[in-house]
Length: 268
Image 1 (tube, rainbow, N blue to C red):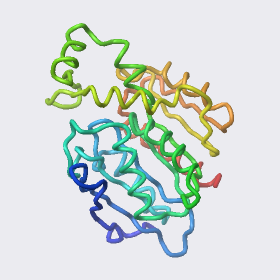
Image 2: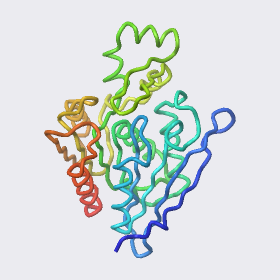
Image 3: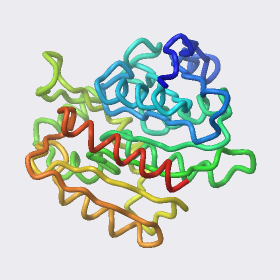
Image 4: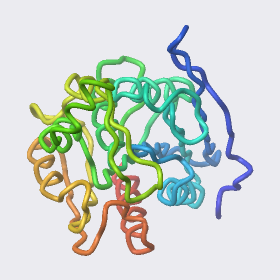
């Protein structure tokens, strides 16, 4: 039986204080009373929002299974407040932690797409430091882009982009997914160096399933292979999708996502 969409609670929480305060939009699907499985937590990618295909499909899966689901927009994304150019990995990670602290699920499955994969891995590290934190029952990473600022952007900067970073504090790059260009700031890149995860063994303490397209023009599948090397202590499944792109939003891709999430729930 599908859990009624009427049980989706839309709310806003304030993260930070003073000039750093911003309103974060959250959609929380409550679990069916008879269910006690993990809440599904969506962590979106750079410039994506919680109304995207994968986020909505994940919420629908939670409804079908009677589980809770948590979606939110990072500051500067979707319908949340704050300026996009103020965004950094640390800032968006702080918002993810604040959302979980507000809702307080006992157990979660993290589903991170692209940059959200990096946020997911950093979130696990931060939650492991806390006594009263939800149990991470599993992680699904879709075209994960951990350390993308240092691994994928910095090595490929043109002289013009470096000059723009030095002079203006940011550079622009055409986007395949929007008429508006991607904007990468000096703060984002410098903060990225303080949040690197591909620098030592990553201990998540839970099963991890990675879905990666081999035709991904933004995050090469070699990056997913590299990530696996940093997860030697975990039960890791890597699914390479030969004709898959970066978004992995086709019906067949969504089915793979649902299967991966469902398998982790059964494992829990």
